[in-house]
Amino acid sequence: MSMVSVEQLRVRLSQMEERRAYFERKSTQPPTRLTRHEVWRHSYLSYPYLIGAPDDRIALRFRDIFINQTELGHSGKIGMRPFQTDDSFLQSFTHMLEEYGSRGGSPPSNVIMDARKPLFRYFQNGDPIAIRMFSGYNVPPSPILVKYGRRQFLDPMLNAGEIRICPASFYNNSGFLESARDDETSRYLFIPTFRERLAGKHHFDFQGHRISFGHDDIMLPVIVPDYYLFSLCDHVYYRMPTDFDADAALIIRDPARFIRQVISAFLARSPEWHVFHGPVTYYDPYRDHTNHDFTKFKVPEMVKHFAYAYQREVRIALRAKRSIRSALEPIHISIGAMTEYAELLYA
Image (tube, rainbow, N blue to C red):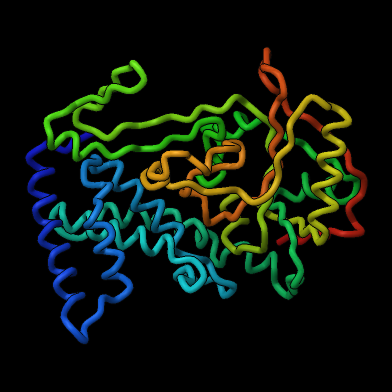
């Protein structure tokens, strides 16, 4: 990992201050007003939180943002995520452009190619499998949940209500596709240290402990004891079947009934657990430390890295009320046939 030197920080910060001053002058010269992307650029230049991060971490962040700013449409074509309803990733992408500008120009071609690589999987076998799976299907206008998976497992789930609920640690499996693999028991934040490094400091003293950061930002881990997890998506998305190696999708037309039955069946078997359910909250490891109260982490089981935000996950999470003394194993429950309020689509 190539660290950022103090001299590099000084040069980059000087360039950014010139850019920031340019936008501030422009904003005060009637009738000129800053455009949306210029406002975002000025915001980043006012606090360049990525300036001290090593190149490989910047490249990984660029890929995460790129993947979330793209969509696979119903026509089977890659497009941009609409920013009218959510422009957070477009803001972050603009910040990345400013950061790469301070590092010598545009994002390197190898970084761009690596960011685009996951998109190629949708077309490995011709049209994305979702085109066949959802052909002719009219998505209900009311709220739904969707479970993407293999037909051999979703069929008994539909017809008999057979459900396997796995520990969160189960998903940290090198054999899974990257889009389905995640360390669900660890989260982390990065705290920028460029101001301290410019002042010649290499550590913080916090509550009697010395935290050294050397020539890097501080990585603050949030470790969660293992828990149980059952994941779904909040709608029909055409990239999900490929991402989860799925050949089928279970459409649940009564989400409240389904969630209630799953929770009841789990607690009837294992009552000593706290239950959480709802949409997952996605956190940005470089931007969500600034509120200092870590609001998004009040229920860490319901929080996930923003690299996965495009999946729009809804989950049921179950936390043990007492310390876990042995490794968790998958639990099998039955909620009865779901045919009254669910249907199975397959390619």
